[in-house]
Amino acid sequence: QMASGLYVETFEAALKNDLALDMDNDTFKCMLVTASYTPNFETHTNKSDVSNEVTGTGYTAGGEALTSVAMTSSSDGTGTIKWDADDVSWTSSTLSNVRAGVIYDDTVTDDRLIAYIDFGGDFSTTSGTFQIQWNAAGIFTLDLKP
Figure 1 (cartoon, rainbow, N blue to C red):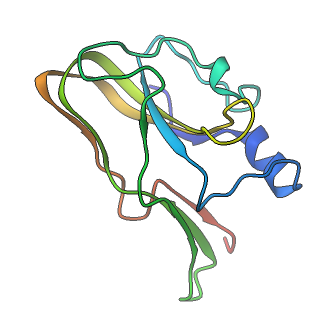
Figure 2 (figure 1 turned 135 degrees about the horizontal axis):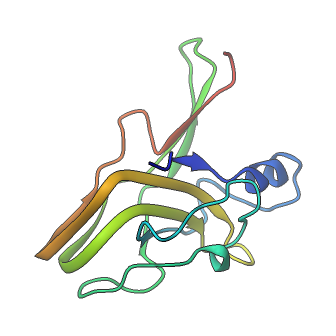
Figure 3 (figure 1 turned 120 degrees about the vertical axis):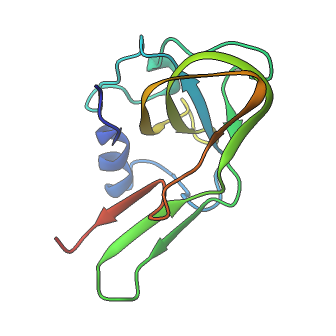
């Protein structure tokens, strides 16, 4: 089973100010992929590196835009930064073998990859709603005070 993770090159470049990522205001999308896509967190940088995007009724290539995106820092002494958004869904969809979500920044050049979220198995819908419910801790949390 593949583990979820963040794409290293994107965050290294962002922390070095090589990218103009605005984690609060850019347009981020979540695309769905099958198990045939194997993420390489150290070399995949752009949406064009992602293969095996799902197809089906109720799904538009490139995925769905995330809403209420926000990056917040802790104020309780834990030293964490959380990045979160509203749950995302594809209503009235018929999709097969959905294994993971890939989040990318649709605002910056080359659509920089942000995160790969492995669902731990293949999921499908038949004229139903495919929804990703993000963890209460956020889509991801960076622990800056281990």
